[in-house]
Amino acid sequence: MSQDNVEIVRRIYAGWTRGDYQVEASVFDPHVEYRQDFGPDFVEVRGSPAMARTWGEYLRQWDSLAHGEIDELIDEGDTVVAVSPLRGRGKQSQVTVEVSDAAVAFVFLDSRIVRVVATDNRRKTLEAVGLLE
Image (cartoon, rainbow, N blue to C red; front, side, top):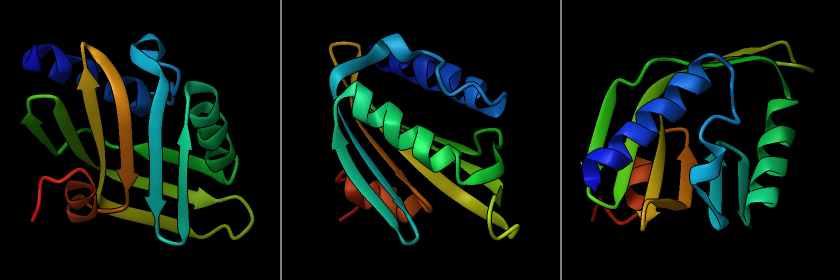
């Protein structure tokens, strides 16, 4: 099952690098827990509609936002963490932001994503899902 989870995360990231944030939407549990922790932006919501709203609000803050290819994929069975660069230009500030190790953890249960933790660095993500002590 772990390899299936890894492949789902690879497909999600392939979509994200193309700007498709709806890719693999069917694998997210309707009651998914979503945590976004980027710098000053911290949000925790529950449910697919709330997660989609949160993503939409976040994406609207950027003139451009691009995920790079996955630099590191950590397979811990039911938890898969993807680390990749993230680059964007703020819509209002016009400031370009580059994050070398943005990370997203996907927690699976019965082939469904039940929790997502997205942060601006690898260590913070691993701590949030209990993979670092």
